[in-house]
Image 1 (cartoon, rainbow, N blue to C red):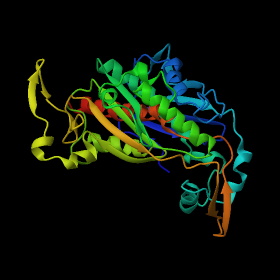
Image 2: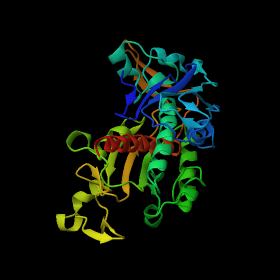
Image 3: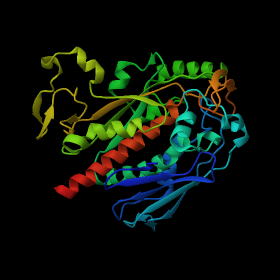
Image 4: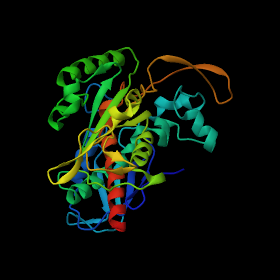
Length: 360
């Protein structure tokens, strides 16, 4: 089972949802990067359960511990080990899942592949696995901020089902607005409608999905590799490796298919002493390599598979049965997925920055 990601900046995650702990090992982090547990904790707090009324109420502090690779607040250049201990497991809520498969979950496919699985909480298929990714992403962010003045990776909820942030807010997302509302969208007015919809779904024992957009600023031209390791290809792989993701598009995305070449092309200009483009339908990447414009992409998240309703399913032997999920689950994954999207973007860009340094 592949649990590692990256080439030069490489992260390996470990742990199950209801096991003793979750964590990661980061290899390839340069030395002398300022890093403390609070840097990592800030991102984990944005991801953790129980942070508001519209997310799962599992009570986890998600306190990180740095076990290696850091001394006196600076990285050593050696492997960084991070661990977060699980504290609020309720494994008895998953007893019936030992024999019955939850619709749209990984229960059946894990059995088909391995012949065994961690039933409680979904084991490695749980979004709790992303603790390791978010921890590693916080380290990658520190490397990028030190190397690229003005670097900023900002993700936000663009839409929940059919409720979408305004075009003006999407064009100029602000961190202060995003973090000021429970759903982490860029539009305060739309946020109220989104929260109301998510609360309605929770009361009905149902769930809802939507789209997260991410804008990365301050990336220099030249990151990404030709052909198979194109920057957008690695971003797509990173995002689609997150739980509950079902789609990825960059720049104009699928809407670009409605334009002609004359309408779609980004015209080059000289501005501020460097080459720029008048428009950014490419989403900051051309030929698989960053061009210095903002990198803009979107990720589609399905409705949470776990709903608190009875559903038809089958047992491991194929016998028809009914199942009703118990335990604590997100009625919408989007608010907690925002820092996950940022983390994976940071990991990809940090890896490609180090790869570019190696050849230049």
